[in-house]
Amino acid sequence: MGLFEKIAGAVGRWARSYGRFQPSRSVTEMFRQGQVLPELAYYHMGSENAPQAIIALECGRTLQSGLWKPLALDDGDLAARVERMGFHADPGRGPNGWRILDPAGEAIGIAYSPGKSAVRVNEGGRVVVHAPDTPPTKR
Image 1 (tube, rainbow, N blue to C red):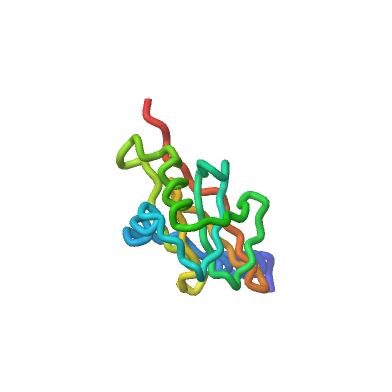
Image 2: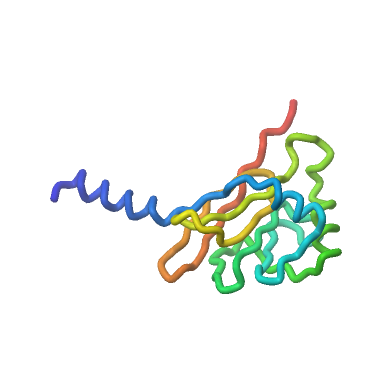
């Protein structure tokens, strides 16, 4: 096997470990209404009281990241945090809801963030969610 084939094989294996964020209006509404799903474990990025982004993964999943911190909350807590995220002032640029999909396209969680993010599922099912894209600021 030549060098090109080895590199192509390695890239293919690496790419197959990535999932994606899929836009979802129903998830956007769920977060804006403060609905907490008990079958999901919630995490935040940034300040706990006014997070930059929130993700929630199936409870059986292991999140591998120093970026995301656990977020214990109830329905009222989630609605208050979403309101304080600070993006609502500029319509069209605010956070949106996303379904988090694994490499096979199966839903493994949800997110509320200003942009989509890269999602990787490592061997053993450990999930890595990178920082979300943020829209450019207006000038």
